[in-house]
Image 1 (cartoon, rainbow, N blue to C red):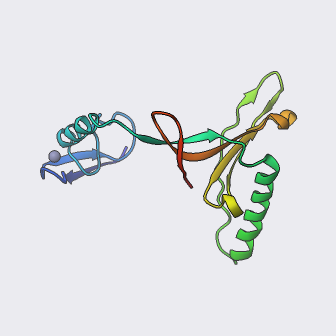
Image 2: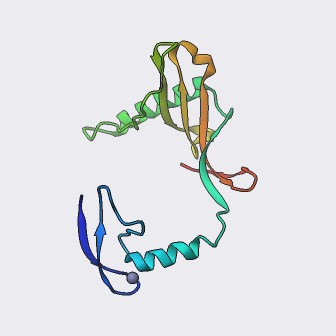
Length: 152
Ligand SMILES: [Zn+2]
């Protein structure tokens, strides 16, 4: 657990901010003391949330397209990365299926070409590749789930 004595951005009160670990105060915040953070949270709770970012199932691209995007993204990275850091990939825990006796393959792929503004996630069981689920990250209206724009 890391704690830090700091000043509240609003009231100037000295307080103890808990930066990591369990057991933090409900209104623990790095900028505001618990009393001010509680007031901010309660005030914001009165304003309805209009949009949220979600992973939406999509048929905009096929698995074959995403696999090609991965190949192209990797070769572009290797071409432009002369002696630098290795490519960082997001790691997903697999979901193990006891009946199939195998775990899911999950990848996050940045889109290319007409899909350069999107990021996708796909997952499937190796023996059921045809049942692949592809999702795209998008900001949607809370009311009707309609996509406002893609996120990356
Ligand atoms: Zn305060």
